Image 1 (cartoon, helix red, strand yellow):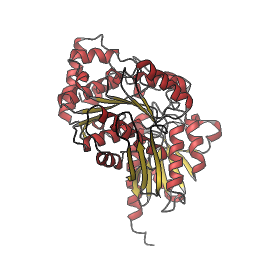
Image 2 (cartoon, rainbow, N blue to C red):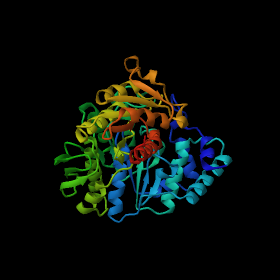
Image 3 (cartoon, rainbow, N blue to C red):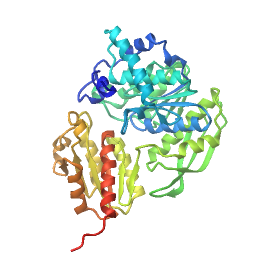
Image 4 (tube, one colour):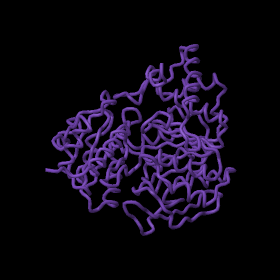
Length: 445
């Protein structure tokens, strides 16, 4: 039986439409203990947040890697293959290691049937075991959901990072921002410094209170570290300035930093990555401004990613209203003269109506793509709300989408795919279809 089928036999909260089952770190803690607690051998950065945590994780990992440290990176979900979630030096875990460590986990579960790990627990175990085996110098660990009860919260990191908090997974984490912030703050450990991009007073108050309780220093965007445009922004290039004064580390000022992130929120995430690097420097790592500059300059996979330039096709995995608003703002800033056609798909537990409200004013047309591999968890267009029901044109296949948009789009019109990580494969394939059609010779009559 292949790994995907074996994992499918576990509780998969990523595929559940409503609520989570066995949402607790207790089961993975027992599985890790059976194998010598490999997570305790890791120097880690632990990252929680609603939006931006994956991008920030990638940038922190690249900074450390550029500084010469063997760096592990654990993120979720994946864009194309499960291997992408577990990386060392940017390279996905090989099949041999993935299958061998999965065998270890499943053998232990067979011997201890009272340990009920989930799909995400199993992958987290594999990541921790792999990083420990390979003796990484630093493991950058992204939470799956929340923080306090997340599988990854068994680690005691060198630095904790909490990116922007917004309403998402409300049935699990709470229906208000302060409730969700308290769940995210559950990753804060005694004496471990905390870096956050959050600026809303209520959210900051929750995080500050948690830090006081753990005697942990809190470093905040807009207070201890900053980012701003330095005057140049376009479809392909953004130039920013980042400054930070974090703890006992010398202040840093990086000017005219070439940066591939188009959304303003990504500037915050880059600044948080640099603030985290300064915290690591204060805790024994050697990371220079040159390492930071190089580490945050490269593209983060799948975030505001231009899959085709001519004709232009853009993808971003934004899956809550705050993230979709950031995408819409970035498109307005980077593509001010383009007509925009959006293709969306939403999971059942998301605020689809809120995402449509954020996106619709930007769009000349809005299409809903039914995703075959996630249909059990996707919604129908009508579930996005009565006011928007007639705006979402349902499409069942990429060929049908390509045919419809070929009639509506000028060659310079921008097609944007957003609403779910699961759209990435479809966006990539559509970009290839559109590019192929654009390069085909005109028909002869």
